[in-house]
Length: 147
Image (cartoon, rainbow, N blue to C red; front, top):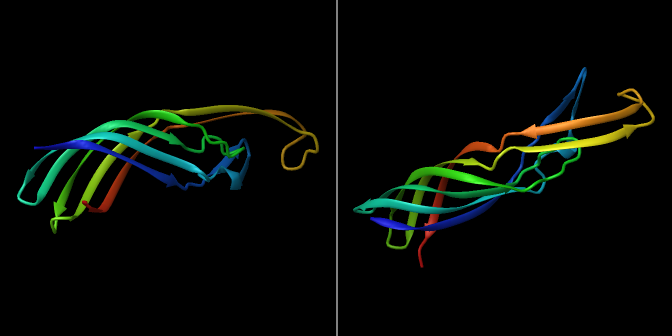
């Protein structure tokens, strides 16, 4: 049996569009610029010969872009669970295939802004509420070096 702790952090890039009534436009500031997520996980598995089969789970956190109108990033915390296979092809080098489900909760924001000049939208005061789920699946392939 093999057990331990593992942590990681990564950048997230994503884009989307914004639909508001009859108007739709590409939200250039609605991407995942500066978005990130990471995990802190326990890992337990069974090793036979040079292969380790494991399950993993723990804390997930992230600052994903939750407002396609303003590009604001909010930080959320949640959970993750998954599993994988790791193979040691030398005493120091391993390769792994891992699948995780990460859920950092739902991000929701409300913004009020004024459009005085009209244009695409008629002049007026608008309220926009955005929300998005913070969950998703990840499949990773990794190469590790053990000191």
